[in-house]
Image 1 (cartoon, one colour):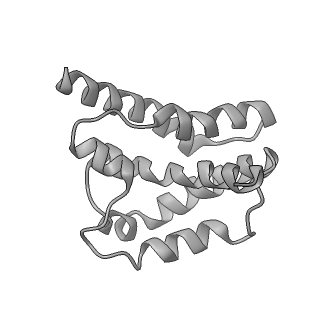
Image 2 (cartoon, rainbow, N blue to C red):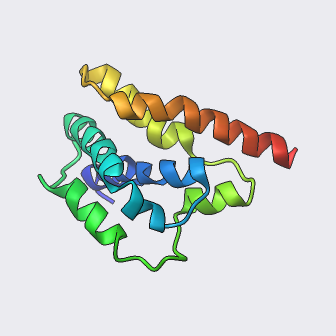
Length: 129
């Protein structure tokens, strides 16, 4: 996979975060679509600054695609969360946070979500232990 596509995938895999915190399925995208959109816009900004090639309307396209998923669909982070397995907080939201710092791009929603995801992830690890 070309570096640009790998970067784009990493930033947009960060969509899992809301599902991971709430342990709800894809109907969550419709209920909190504007929040997801803002979060993805932040991720897209830092992704582009890091060299990812993303369409100008990539966040809107992502939300539109996710809204077509069946109600019982979920993401890998969601399924890890409900199974009590640790998930990829640092590789996804942590990467957006680090890139925001590196490029001095404000990412307020991602910054809010990162400690929540860390706490949720730590809870999943503690439950499994």
